[in-house]
Image 1 (spheres, helix red, strand yellow):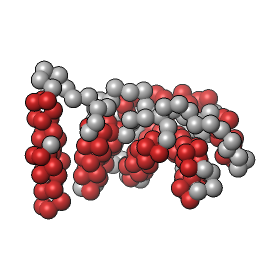
Image 2: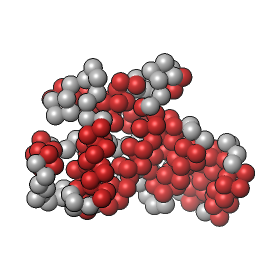
Image 3: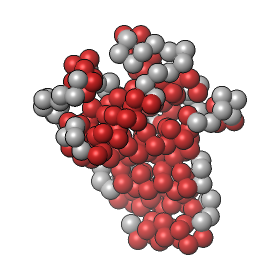
Image 4: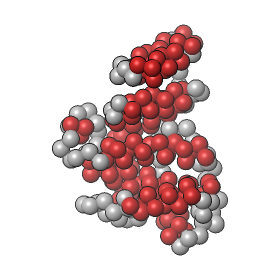
Length: 214
């Protein structure tokens, strides 16, 4: 990892837009040497952390599609717990920045697989999952859970789309997520929407639920 780490620190020193790609190439060369004839799995440490680092590099340069791609590659490690919340926070942060682009932005005219409307629908679903996951993991009265619930409320209504707890919303959500996951090259089904029981518990201010198994 020495060469990859050197490329990482060089990025911060020079702020060079090519450094993320150079960093990826360094990692690929190392993984090829470690696993001749096959690729280092995205789910095998330290690859998730490397992908999240690359995502941060692209986010710094405001290349949000690439930032999201690598964030998804590194952020689907688990299904519950503090690491899951941390991953979902990172994913939602990048998606929000993408979703704020105007509908006629070049972002949505290129290879990115979703329209702005589809992205906003996906974002609303992810925020619902983040709100429930934060409350289950850290407690509904914690600052993080309260902020996540408030954030989810801000984006709960997507113009031109059904309410988040409507069956049609779920159908459109999973269709959009499947496109995004395929584009990102992730061998994973993605995130799951919270159940009606989960969401009702948050709305009623009660979360006497056990976290799902990872």
